[in-house]
Image (cartoon, rainbow, N blue to C red):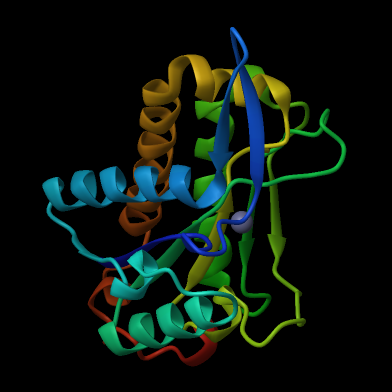
Length: 217
Ligand SMILES: [Zn+2]
C-alpha cells in the first residue's frame, strides 16, 4: 500500500491550542499541530517498517498559513499518487465535557467511508476510558473555505479526530503520559489503516493509484 500521512494544520496555524497547568506555577501549551506531527512521524515509521510506502507531503513541515498549507498538501498528495490519504487532527469544543472519536470521509466515497469506520473503531479502543459516547463516522459536508482535505484529494481520504484536546482528562493524559498518548494513537491509526487495506479486494489493491478523482471510489 502507498498511503499519505499528514498532520492537520501547520506550525504557523496550529489548530486547537490549550494550556495545561503543570503545577508550581508552570504551564504547558498543547498545540494540535505539534501533537499530530509527532503522531504522524511515528506512524509513518511504523507503516514503513510493516512494508508500506508512506508519502509525507513536504509542505506539512513548512510554516504556511491557511489556506496555503491545505492547498499545497492536497496538490502534493494528488501528484504523489497514493491508495489512501489520512489527515491527523485533535478535536476541540467550547464544551470541555465533550470527548468522542470522529472520522470524516467524502460523502460519495465508499472506500473512504470504510477507512473512516476502521479508524474510528480503533480510536475508541485506544482511548476507551476517556470517551463519553460511541465513535462517530460522518461524511464531511463542509463546503466553506477554499479546499477541504477529503473533498479535493483524489484517493479515498479521511480526517481522523480521535479525541478532544479541549477535554481536561485528555489534557492531563498528554501532560502526565505524553509518550503513551502518542503511542496509543500511532497504534490506532496503524491498525485502522492496515485493517482497511487488508479488507480491500485484490482487484482494488492492484487498481491504478490516483485513478479515483475526488475520492469517489
Ligand atoms: Zn484540526
